[in-house]
Image (cartoon, rainbow, N blue to C red; front, side):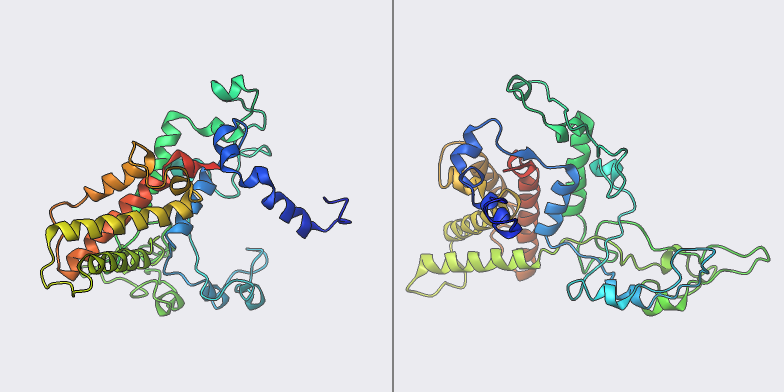
Length: 344
């Protein structure tokens, strides 16, 4: 294609993505050589994107951060250029991961060698080896590593959310020098800029009243955004409930059976939506509404059993909390599916 189009890379990419082998479910399911395992880092970032995770650190703040280093002390002596910031989408945020090696086996730009984290000719014992295939990414899929990766997903998905104080999964706290002193015993002060941007509550702590750590507002924490998913769940529930009583209005106290059916419909919608984000819609395409035992049905049945004691509440707050619990568990189960780990 490259030769036939005189080097038109757009046509080359189009041909690759639209090729039958790249789009055929029968080939994806029935061919041993189809697909590749996602690296843990790509697997993890796919989950972050699906939940629209965010922090309280606007990237734009870097364009005004005071830089007091000289050229002898640092290669960077000015704030982040506005011209570079403008290349990012509006409202871009910072994610201050210090080191993800222990949690998901990989840290960006910290590969141990030029061969990445795994050898290009690694062969996984078993069916893949018998088929003469290599699987580089599986070299890091040891028992302990797989558990660590799953736990990394869990710790993010089940982190606290607002309005809980200091909500989210802690990443790398911004430097807090309020607990240190000069050689003469003078307490160091946090730059006023960091207070003005909402990172800290004050430049210094008051002994006997608060502590240095208490000044930090944990704005770097990683927070999954569940609001849109809860809205999708709630709207689906309301639509399904209304359909059961139509053309009459939904009574003030709907029947338990009707509420159960409405919740079940909402769960299906959330599962299928998450499936489309994390597993390319594989579960719905492969299993649809099949009543036999299959991964999609197992997830739907399992999520339907969660929070059984308050699943039929009419209280708006409890309903939203229950919906969040179901959404969390749905995305956790989907993110750790084999179909979410294999890229096809």
